[in-house]
Image (cartoon, rainbow, N blue to C red; front, side, top):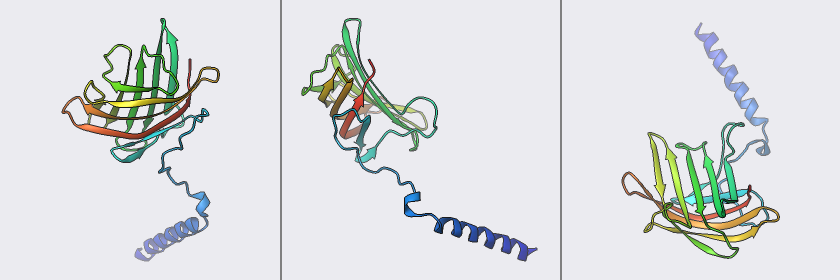
Length: 188
């Protein structure tokens, strides 16, 4: 009986070795570990560093909410902006959101990311799940910047760069978002 078990284990091991030796290096999918290039052509790319680590949108499941959304809309006589991207592959899953309330963007301008409650302001927050949801947000004193490098209303393209610090509401811990960039086709 022990001989049969040992033989089965060897056959399984041999099958695994045969499987992996028949794969070429092109068959192995490597995770993206670099930020996307800074572009202005509507490539639908976004990424940043979160406390020094690359953060890119990723969705495990093939169906459901897209991992990246972007809108720039004229509603009730004013402009609203939202860029959201999440990664549910990493543990804990995380979401970054940058928004603009009652704020018409101008190409080439830089906007300070502050408290969301301010009228006519840009703001940002990060949600990290796992053992509860921790929300980090920009405030009037913990801020950042959003620069609009391209705004093409004809093609619905908005591109830019961003960086910000955000404070966790529960205990004041700061998270640092750096080297952010996006190149999106937005919905109106």
